[in-house]
Length: 51
Image 1 (cartoon, rainbow, N blue to C red):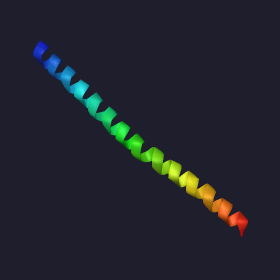
Image 2 (image 1 turned 90 degrees about the horizontal axis):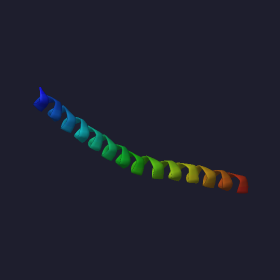
Image 3 (image 1 turned 120 degrees about the vertical axis):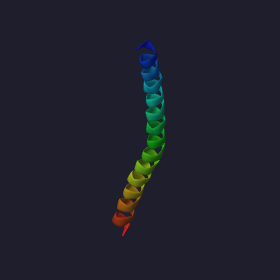
Image 4 (image 1 turned 45 degrees about the vertical axis):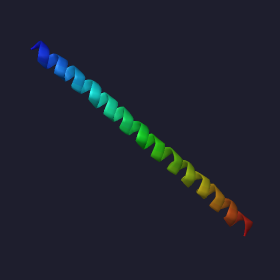
């Protein structure tokens, strides 16, 4: 029983590590994309008002 618990504990730790890494990767992708979209939208609006 104790062996099973330690296995579950290590599995839980690896799952947390993997999910945090995936979260960081997703964060690293989503944030620049969002910034780019917001910047391009603002740029486009400025371009439209200049016409």
